[in-house]
Length: 310
Length: 298
Image (cartoon, rainbow over all chains, first blue to last red; front, side, top):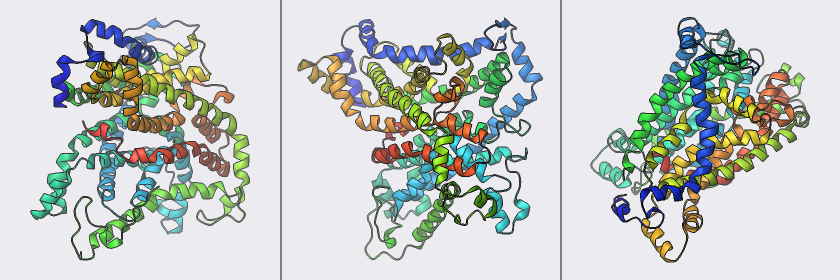
């Protein structure tokens, strides 16, 4: 990167000329993406924040009425489902940082070695990630089927009848049943990222450590782990963001039930706006979700772009 | 899957990149690890096997036979029936049209924008890049309500074009972020010499930068094709008429309308995933080659 930066001051071609003219010349390349982004992404997001200060059914015949912070007061004090959704989202983020990330890392470390069938193993673990989440929800709903599903039938066959239960019908465990499906689907992607990160572990350092008598754990602790640090940051942030986005799996498996016990923020904003025709409170939930997301995304981006200073 | 490493089991334990010693003793740790991996892989495969078994069983077999037994008669007609009930050709056609327009067009738009941000170095280009990146990471559900209103007022609800526009808006930012690094790393000397040879900025973009970014474009193509084919939340919000449904909406529709047709549902799911599996296998080479190295450099 260093030589490129030192040349930047005498930049040729595209970067020639005063900075304002450069922007004008960059505009044709930039405009399509910028317009699409502004109109179909940024504007709806900002409009959601605006609508959170209004009361509106969402029907065009009715116009939104300004109510100030009323929607926030309502979701914070009078809407127990909001708190369930918030708690579930937090649980999901924390669990995702532990379970699938650990499995991904272990798989990547194992599958970074040479072995028979390595690529086949990698493909099997990655394959669920290619399926749509809504499809994965269908598959697992069938696996969890109380009477005919794979899980309960297998438990009965091996003599664990007592364990068989309503995996998605029991409010105490439904969220974790859905989470299991997300682990099955999600570890492949983390594994691929960690494998890419392991390519950046310098083999000479591994050799040197071995020659100095380091064992497997010591090599991992003092050579692989430091080299994996940037990858780990990326995986952590992506895991947290993706946990906040969980929607399809819940819609497909429980729809937020039973008794709203599997509600999450991303689904609750949708349900409030479209099913309950309460765009105001739905938008207030959306705004809360937006703020949480920005708290995670912005520091990460500042960190990842720090190396790109001109 | 294309190139399975054929290594004798005794060598399985050596860390890649580490030169093997002569006459290595049998590596029990490596063998144990391999067995553990095999068991996990089988466990990971079980849902697929169960899905396939269900898809070829008749209703009677599903109700009476133990889950793991083979069907008494192989009920391939489930697949024929699912094509009919799930309206597979129409929905797959919709998904294919949307994906085949959105993915290449999106990559082109993103490449152009990434080129502008990486090569022109105008004031505040990093701020703009950051704005795009933020947009690529916030949950789409935040925008769904207002997006519905926007599409309603544009009279674009329930149409393929009206689906492609937000798909582009939500897909392009991430691709810009990924390609920015690629274009940024192209040495200035290359641009200088192409300018001396009389090439315009556009030719430099089209004939030098884009071909150089081919590995990144290939990786983004798979990721984006899979993501577009599988997208549910936006499609379910904007599409109403069944004849406009895409595959994920149809899967969920099948699921809720024919709740007890397990054979048909699983047959439908298998068929609906064929295109993404093909794309994934076709491009897997690029995928494995560390096309993600850009993502993890930090």
